[in-house]
Amino acid sequence: MMAGIRLVARRELGAYFDSPIAYITAAVFLVLAGTSFMNSFFLQGVIDMTPFFETLPYLLIPFVPALTMRTWSEEHAQGTVELLLTLPLLPLQLVIGKYGAALLYFALILAGSLPIVGMLSWLGAPDLGLILSGYLGAFLLGALFLAFGQFLSSLTHNQIVAFALGALLACVLVFSGHPSVVEVIDGLAPTWQPGTVMADAISCLPHYEAFVGGLIGLDHLLYFLLLSAFFLWLTQVGLRRIQY
Amino acid sequence: MNELCRLHQIHMGYGREVVLRGVDLPIQRGSILGLVGENGSGKSTLLKILSGVLRPDSGDLRGAGGRPRVGYMPENCQWYPYLSGAQVLRYFASYVSASVNDQQAILTRVGLWEARDKKVAAYSKGMKQKLGLAQALLGAPELLVLDEPTNGLDPRGIIDFYRILREHAQAGATIVLSSHLLAEIEDHITHVAFLRDGRILRSGACSQLVEHCGLPSRVFIRDEGDVAFLQPVLRSQGWGVESSDHGIEVLLPRREVGSLLRAIAGVRGDVGDIEIRHAGLNDLYLHTFGVRSMAAPAASAVVDVRRNGDV
Image 1 (cartoon, rainbow over the protein chains, first blue to last red):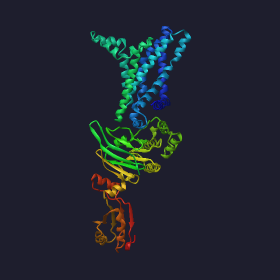
Image 2 (image 1 turned 90 degrees about the horizontal axis):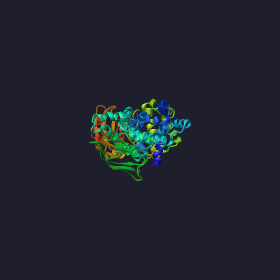
Image 3 (image 1 turned 120 degrees about the vertical axis):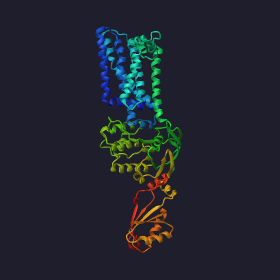
Image 4 (image 1 turned 90 degrees about the vertical axis):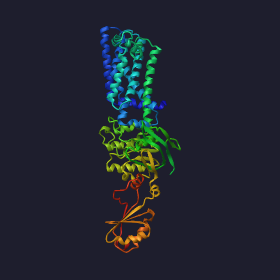
């Protein structure tokens, strides 16, 4: 099982780095994240990475679907998904292999922001535990976005549609927990407070912000892990449906 | 020949549409099996089940040694346009542990070595088909499954394609392919299966099927004088004889063609060309599908008969 997953992941990771788009996307992401952080850093003058992590969910809304949009929709469009299914691999191995490669690529890009930690440590004494917790939250948030991005890519032959669907779902998961949005929706039915209910039920933002605030709770951890696993399961079910 | 595997009672549908209805098909080791049928008869679905892309609603693929190692060439595969032919092959080779030497040998064999570094986006339809064949050959599969493999190939490409298939079959592999072009596959396949509305109407070795169906050979004797004098002689042997403006046509079992030629040789008179046409895939198709032949027969052998019946 693991050998098959490793094979797919290695191949997929190679495909990411074969293309200049991967480098350009990573560079754009890091420049945007870095600029946004430096702006806050110089304005507030605090040795803290929180502004970086606070901006991250909004940057990931277009970034992660751009990574995942080709994952399966390209295989469908080019007809190569049929060839993959003839290989001595289970659909689950293909899904986890592709997901693992995307996750590793995302982790590498996230690691590209480590110079900020170095800079903060050089300038003062940042709370490294808080930073570590923030990185864990960022990794889990990316993992969730990658999981549903891959699932949505498996539903369509069109990469643009996959991107749009991925960005839309990411928007829903992030903005449904944004205080301004919650307030507006709550205002529509003050008795029921639908905005708060929605934020508690589906939004990833409260769970992510808990990590950014240094709180690693089991409920927050499970939210990301279970939801990611659910989307991966859905993706392999979709592939098996091609077979069945 | 022994059996490599057998499709057993395959039923398959897409939603409410039933595509395959209880298909039983033995596949003999080392054979080249042509899957022939009209559009929508279920050929591609059957090939996808055989290659493992699809799983049937019921039924299974039974093989003495389990599921054979399959190389599959789908119809109209577009590949990854931003990769070169060699990169595409390397991508799939990594899954089946095919060495770099194997990849190079296969690219050379299918005639893509010169174009290996070109992007697939710049490939013609025929080159994409060749890349499909190259990909299917990776890992030396026991069973090669090819869906409409010569679509888009030029005549040279078709000749090369069947040469590669023959070499592969001679090396012990088994090949299953679908095609609409009976004349094209006739000289290359050893077995045939006719499919209609998701059912196998007839399958087996081509020569045995022709004999089993009792399809006669046709001998056309062209008129270069007056061949009418032959008719009573031939009828006396019990062969069916039909007259036309250009001569006569004799229908007889293949094994009796020699006797016919001897009978003609024994009669004095002017006889023109003799054209012998043994029943083939086209006749088998027409017979199986219950269609009357409209086309003029193609010659499989022409014998020039001179005065006094010298052959």
